[in-house]
Length: 378
Image 1 (cartoon, rainbow, N blue to C red):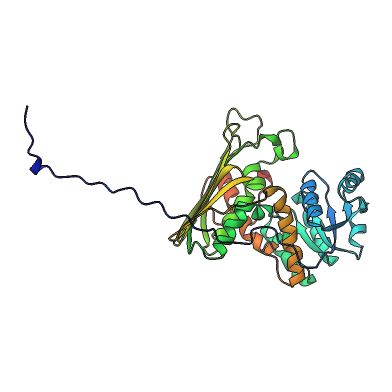
Image 2 (cartoon, helix red, strand yellow):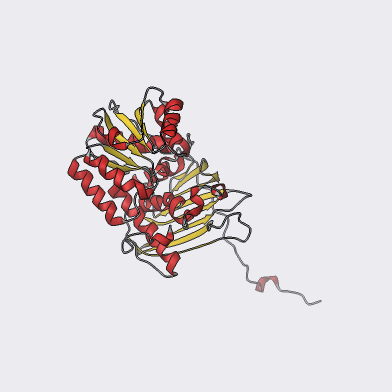
């Protein structure tokens, strides 16, 4: 057997495992819904469908005063009234409701096609408005409504309730506070079962995932990448052979920035092993969030000082609905624009609309150039 001269063998060295960053105290950020100091106006709800119960549960818990309900189906308005605010009035004609001087704020929770006219009439009646999401189907219409609110000297906000989901709220505030420095990348991955929409009106929406559901993540993307202009978007959507409904439950999008990138992945038929993750990466820090769903997320903030794991409380439903209305009321009280203003939300819609157009046409699209969603895409 040949012998080896150990003195002539070059020793190979390998890097040792990096020392784990120290645990540090998490920065305190006001991620919980914020209420106005004293402003408690009369609120009216127009549209008393399924989602309305989450609005009302949040408002009742916050001590907000809902004094009127309106729905084309008067019995549905009465049922919501009886369950949540028994002393409120009910209407099947929104014009009667808008004539009430004691109604100062209107929550419009109908579907988008009917909502534009209702928002316009509410603004002309000098009411502050919280619009359900997605805000509009046409960016030009959205800009016109935002201009109209300014002209009438009232506020128009959008119910992008995902902003006040505890993990999303902490993340967006960490970015806004500069804790991550210059953000260069954001990645969202959502694996859950959206087939509960089978047999509901949502099943008829062609882009149910990228549009109706995904708008929350496009909105978060616009917030955390606010310092960068999105240049191009590519997206796709598909269905699996085993999913129980025809509407595509899978979608994804990639967004290119001049100095950054982002991705969004939606697996809407994950009957086993649900999981959701978020990663936002900056030159001074990175923030991660992960968990079995959007109500159970663990957040980690990693900076040169160490790793912080804030102990967040609350849930997307119904803190999100408390947050959107609370921000509008707070803004009215402080005579400023709400952070969830209609004009602010147009940046989110521009990315979303470009993604839908890309998925339809199979090519790159530029956010802002796609002004509306084609009817066939809805």
